[in-house]
Length: 97
Image (tube, rainbow, N blue to C red; front, side, top):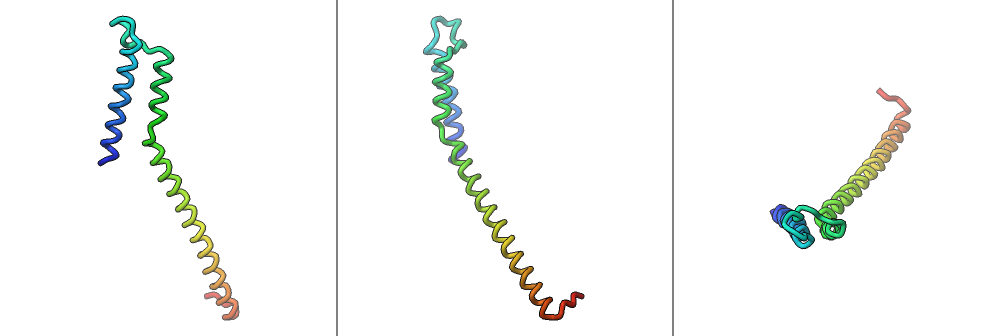
């Protein structure tokens, strides 16, 4: 719930930033919709300072590392079990039903 509120707050902030940037750089009422390069750079800087997406990327990275560890552990366990079965088969004389 807090994440949705934070996202909504950030969306409002970007909307207000765009609106204010257009108002600050106008020379007349007709130029309200025109934005110059400096305004776009300022908007891009504000968007890059947000850290919302970084948290999700970090969770994804941790999840990927955990998945790799599980796959590695299961592979090692499978090889160990296979080795034990082969040892038992060898002790029984190699007879496999």
